[in-house]
Image (cartoon, rainbow, N blue to C red; front, top):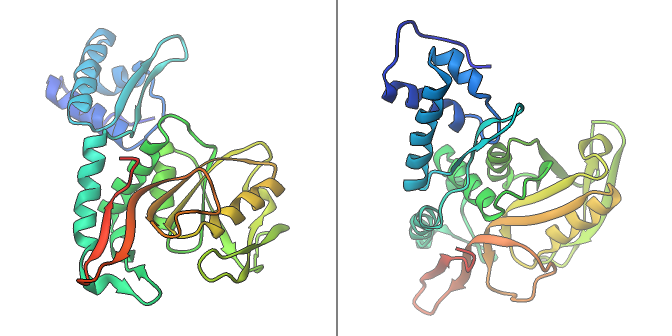
Length: 276
């Protein structure tokens, strides 16, 4: 519960800043109106009116959704579901940076670690990926070590659920584990991934987040691994997907950016995905 840190009566603007601060820093967490009544030393009707103004501001500037739940167990919570215009603006900015020719790596990959590991971008990308799944909230967010971890962590934060990291290979130190072999879609080699048994409970709804998708072999392996855990993969979200091969090893996924390789003039072909 937030601690009271002031004395005296607050102006409306101050109350709204305090409420917005707590909501933004705890996505999906339900705050009772009584929490803000006590924190702000304000009447319940005043808090309700202030929250109405906060909600309107969030809607107007596409900052996410502030919703009020009625009933004895109700309250208010913030859902970080950015508007399509805000998401597209973020992606356009990143596409511009990704068109730098020095980002092209051997094997047809792009260097993106500096972007996905920058807190400002990682947070915005995590909220954008969460936004693509709307209010279909998972129980856990999954990723495979290591480059997808920052994006997956920020996606997990947006949903206020745990992050679970799958390890490549079979080395684990967290008790009994499950390993599966899978065929890498890019290298066409057989690889393995491992996850401790206690990491995902049977019946869990999981969302897989990764930084890059080419053919989908890793994502296919995650599906196979979750079958062993009797968990349901409710979605797959990636930062960047390649346009080739067009036929992926998975059917259902969403991405933020499409990468089409390099044209004859040496230009890197990146654009917002078809989901934006």
